Image (tube, rainbow, N blue to C red; front, top):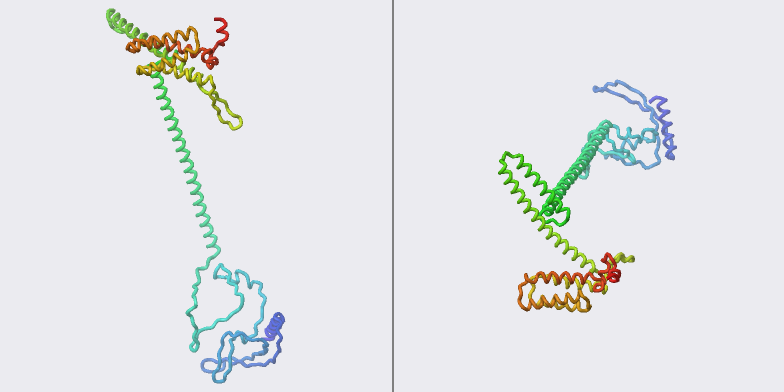
Length: 407
């Protein structure tokens, strides 16, 4: 050790004890001769080493050592025999210093410690020890590569999810459009069936003027087509006249059929009109309550009277009844109209008596059809008269008072 190294060593020692506030006594210096010999014992080099002895006034840490059994000298560990001092290193706790070529995790030691090696006269218990093998060093390039792979993996999954979601949305939209198209086709087919049935019904059972107009137009179209076909054919004059006669006969039959249908339709329309009128006069009064929005229905004396008259009229319309049932209906009708005395009520009572007399004589029902129809019509006039049925006044086009005053 030269003088400069010795001066630096002493300065470092003083700085160490000043920082740790140790009190120590400086010892003496002495020189020691170091001799280096070869294998044969010949001296190759000799030099002088100056050593400074420092007496420590603190308990030395026991870090292992050796005890001479002959002399009893205790030889401490070399780490405890030398004076330790703190050196300030700017990169002591830096990541590169602590983890260089080792790991990405921090390995800063909280305090210094020693190790003990096993030898012939020393047994170390290794049963609770755990052996850790160093792993492959994970460089920044590997970290960036792993991050890129993870990012690509996430992007692939996200894009796949987006693609599947869009595909499902398109599939659902396509399925919805197909369902809507099927529903439209089904509705169109159903409407066509209903329209076709309605057209057939209008031709087989016509009810309105428009229905009969269609029949007449189709009949005229058929007649015109048949006549044109016959005239343009290669038949003789006699054959053409015979074919035209057949067309005329068939046209006549069809016109008669249309007339019969018209009579049936008029009767049905008349019955529907009468039933609608009777239902209208017998329905209860209705109004909407503003407090709770509920619909209130109330039967008045007039509506109750109208319902009773409607029941009697429906009884008179019934056919194929027993003798007692028919007589009961006639008696009820007679006592209902006898409350008023006028030409109409007297005529109704006279018809009831005539029918009851014929029933008692055992006359068949077909012979009574005209009498029953007349009785039914007269009783309908009785119902339509506001004097006997006040509820019917609402359906009079001309007020009853005016008609009564003029008559």
